[in-house]
Picture 1 (tube, chains in turn red, orange):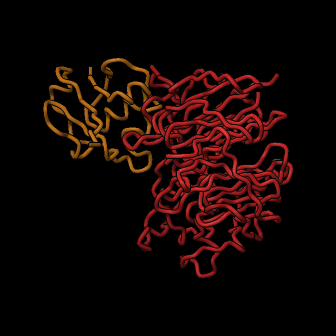
Picture 2: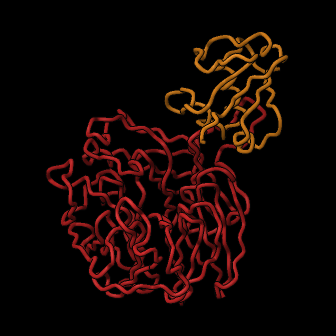
Length: 385
Length: 98
């Protein structure tokens, strides 16, 4: 029977939760990097024991950590102690420096503001090479390592896709989603709050906005409406990379042509605001969202924590409530805090700002709290081992 | 022998306990001390001063001999007590919250 490992990033460290295929009893290890914000950690599909973590702090900046043993031990790549001045490794694993002229994006008030690196929001390891990882950062840009995290280099063409018109969302100008097309290594999708979705077909040499059809209620900085959309998260099923699902600030959307055109599929959701969206491991048309009361309250409508599932790729949604609190619940679920495993009966997991991680071993029909009292959860990833 | 006291999280990150002791040839300045720290502990690169600008991170301060050296130019010689090892250089995380 396969095992499942959940990688949980929180405001105060990382936690690793493991279980067998029944997913009833869980071991909890952590906190790793206690006291630091762990925006995201993720394992390599090519080597599941190779994990990467984004460790950051308002005091000390950004650190990248790597594990070779599934999260038991960690090291900053190239960051070990040196005792001899000659031949010492350069401590560049934390070095995220924008390429060329730093340039300016729009600030909240619409004035130009220089790009400033703050942190890594998301790490996306390659499907095939454990040493190749993409990093989405704030202020929004895409970086790549091909040496296991020792050095990082920006793919600067992304910021040429009308970067001067990108404007931060309330949480900052973060590149939060990276989707790698397993069938086409040259194709990458990224999503940025609040700039939109961008696609490259040549491995990052050129990018173009992929936002046609999206509707945003307020005036956008880009009169052509190509950039400025507050995209919260996007998801795809690896067997169907041309179909994308999106949770946007105001609605849930779907594209059937690789982001060329989008249409709304919010349907009967109680609120079309929310952060995460994910796809069932074996049913490419089954998707999950967690509706949140928009947009200044950021907790579930009616104080009931409900995951909504659509088995039709959107428009028609059913609430999933068994095992989830149905009164007095005022948590939020952040954009990177939902994941699925790939066991035969698909497991679905999400973490809350209240420190709970909920899991379902039956595709969402029944839920249990795996842990109750972690720090606020920033991200959840699932590995099927 | 230059003695440096790192804040808790940087000691954990660098996996050191207690003070860091460094041998520095030539003029002892904030810049030369930070260069030596980052050379000895590469993982601390970027955590005390910005990789690109080399400016002190905003929530960190430098103290020695009960003096705030945080805003001194980086090539200012450090006090003789620090150079001789009598007093440590403190790198302190700002207390923020409330």
